[in-house]
Image 1 (tube, rainbow, N blue to C red):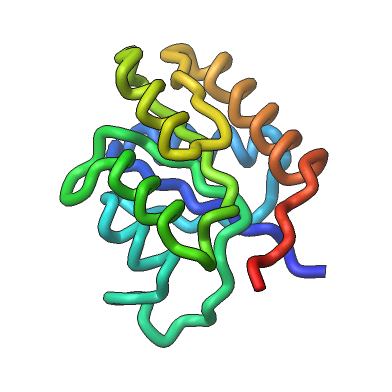
Image 2 (tube, rainbow, N blue to C red):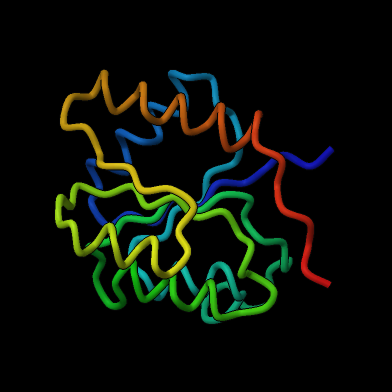
Length: 146
């Protein structure tokens, strides 16, 4: 059985390290791909740019920050939901944004969940552990679009 892949879309190196350490601490050993801006995330998902020619498997979960260089998280989410092949892809916004407008737009665009990043590492690690257990173990993934 293929391991379920996580795509972490995050531009802050400290938050990337924290997330990877939190996955490890929670014994979530799934492969984690990291995209450091919105365009790189889309290139990874749609296998364009530097990912052209890579196997076309979609990630099983996208953890998406909102405040990204090149292309913002909400624009990434919109592109994911507009494409027939990716519209069911589970996307969780994981952000420090406390803007109610960001949350409303995320849900309007079809995000599956919106989580504010805790500042404290222990709380952040707990959030990552719960995310991993829910989305990678308990949740039934959507059937592929035909």
